[in-house]
Structure formats: C-alpha cells, structure tokens
Amino acid sequence: MTDADLFLGRVISDGGRVTLALSSREIWVIEKKLCERSQPTTQQDIADNLGVPFAAAKFLCHRQGNPRNKAFMRIYLQIPIHGTQYQSSQIRRKQAAKPQAHAELTTLKIFKKMGCDVVPDLLAYQERKQGEDSIVPGGYITYVVWDKVPGEPLSADEFWELDLESCKAIRDKFPEFFSIRKLKKYGYLPRMPTKSKIIFDKATRDMHFSGFSRAGHTDTNEEWHDKYWVLFDLAEPPPETD
Image 1 (spheres, rainbow, N blue to C red):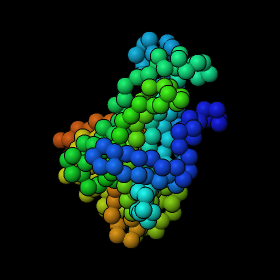
Image 2: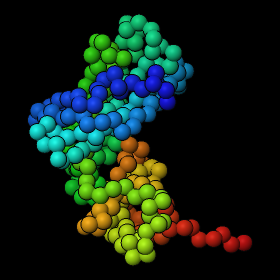
Image 3: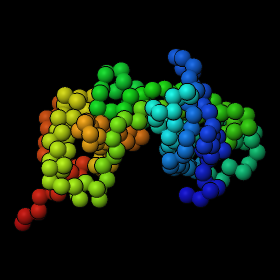
Image 4: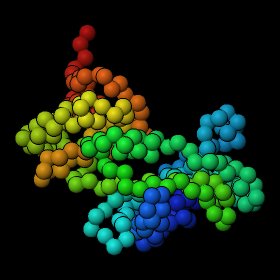
C-alpha cells in the first residue's frame, strides 16, 4: 500500500482526539497508528453488489485523563470508488452510503451483550457521516474501541521456542477457554485463526481471543475436537498416511 492509498491519516493523526458520544461522551486520545488496509471496489463491483469500498485502520489509544489504561480503536471509512478519488466532491458525495455491517463490531457487540469474558471488552463505538470536506462527503465512518487486555499475542517464532512447560501451560488453557462453555458458546470465531489470535498473559496464565475484523459463524453445539490445536497452530498436523 502506497502513501496515496492511506486514507485514515487524513482523518486522524497521532495525538489526535476522537469524541464518541453514543451513551456517554468520552474523548479518546490516539497514541499511534498500528496498521491500515483498504478494500477498493470498481464501478462494476458496485453494480454486482460486491459491497461499498472502505479503508480500515487500527490505532493504540486511551481515554483522555487515563493514559495508563490502553485500548485499541479501529476506524472504518468509506472511500471513493476506484478511479474517482480525484474527482469533484459533488461526484464523490453521490457515492455516500449508510454504515455497513462490519463483522468486528457485530461480533464484539454480541460478545458484550452475552457476557463473554474471553474476548476484549467493547468499550465504545459510533457510526457517523463524514463531513463535507472528507473523502466521501456524507459517506459513513465507524469507530470501534475495545480493551487492550493483559498479555501479548502469541507469535509463531516465540511459541515454538518456548520450553516444554510453557508450551504445555498454553495448550492446557486453550481447550478450557475455547470450548463451548467459553468462546464457541457465542457462535463466532476469527475467520483466519492462528496463534496470533490468542493473547496470553504469562504472569497470570489468563487467555483471551482477538482478531474479529474477519469473523465467521461456528457451530455452537460442536464439542471440543483436536483439530482446533492444528487450526490455531498450537500443534503440528499428524503425518498423512497412504
């Protein structure tokens, strides 16, 4: 992605403030942008009902006045149809769409409503219209804020370099937190599960699951199966036999 393809830097920068006022007015301070991706579409894609083009960026942030308690914010921003980004604001305004149902907000709202305690807590969200001087005047912009839980995502290199006792501690916890009594109970999983979706606190051995920007439904009645060790890259698949 080139600098020209980065849209969220035009909306908010490091040190910027975002005021969200869905249930109560809160000001969130942006510390730094962590990543950004875009999903462009063409006129033909729109005609084929393939969705509204958007960019999404993830930020590290905190509530104003409480810098020690970190959180993450993702901003979803409608962007112009490919090839129209440099056309007049009048043309871009005609593309304005209502807020789209992004999987991340949908799943975090469900987890919060049902009291799921193995995913980061949804702290705030809001769906708005872009201003008249924005990239798509009147287009949608959605803010999602969730807690930064203790621990760090597991990395491939780190996990396989751990001593046997530490690996065993993680594997022992995984079925307990993943089972139909915990994560699977609520019907959603990360669509591309890897060990990086597991946040493990070495001090307390507590575990959370993250990465729901691409989430999918799962069978809530399915019992534990050893395939989930492999799916989350916590074990090697068995060798194939003839």
